[in-house]
Length: 56
Image (cartoon, rainbow, N blue to C red):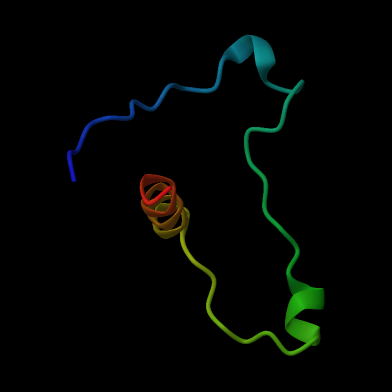
């Protein structure tokens, strides 16, 4: 897979405090219902999604 396709851009100062720059899900209910599998990292999830898109 080719590297360097994405470029990180700092969160614009003008948008700080107006939009979320970080989110994190509360998975406590999911765990309480018995889901014990580890969660994917963002990188793993993106890789899986891109692979899925490429098979369509």
